[in-house]
Amino acid sequence: NDASAGTLLFLQFVGSALGAVFTGLDRVRALAIGYVLVALSTVAMSFATMHAPFAAFFFYGLGLGMAMTATSLLITDRSGDESAARLEGLNFIWSVGATSGPILFLPFLHNRDVRGLFLLLSTLSLLLLAWVLFAERHEQPVRSTKRQAAAPGARGILFAFVVLAMCSVGVEAALSGWLTTYSHRAGLNSLAGSALATSLFWFGEMLSRLAFSTRLLA
Image 1: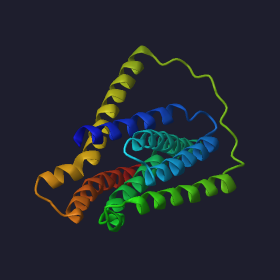
Image 2: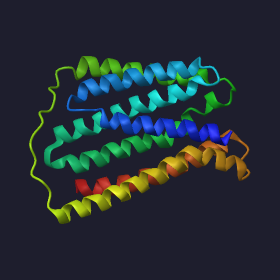
Image 3: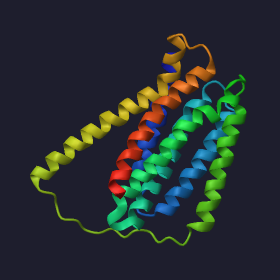
Image 4: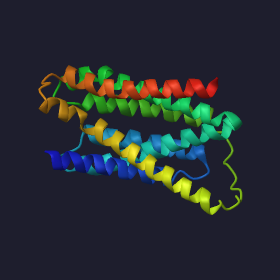
């Protein structure tokens, strides 16, 4: 029902927010822990009983939050003055995945048993974990540095951007999480139509990020 679905989404994004907080200065360790949590939680979803998915969704969000935050911070650490453009490029790649995901995973959704989808996600997470352990293990943790306190005016501007970012991500999460349900209730009874609606939403974001990253790289 809607209440249970909303609780699952809430737990996922609470976990994701905490994962961003827990990332720390050792980006590679955070990446490894994140992918381990994603792999374990998706396996748990595959064999979960009625109430177990609530815990699994929380740890899935926690792992995803750590992995995504650590990835962004690694890009920032390695890009220097080009970090803004590199991050926009990374956001574009994530949008490509979000756009293609609903269509690529559609064959799994035609069956009532979606165990194969969760096991596929777990396998992909383990492959990423292996890449982190073998290709990124020599990355040194970032040392903490003292920063000068921001001026009062700059703090106000920063607070405004934080509020705008929170609202933007909140709208994005709500739409992407509920768009399939909305599509069904609006008359799109086929899974393909609902998947296409979600893909079109992410396709719009992908185009905007592509345009902005192109301007930054110019």
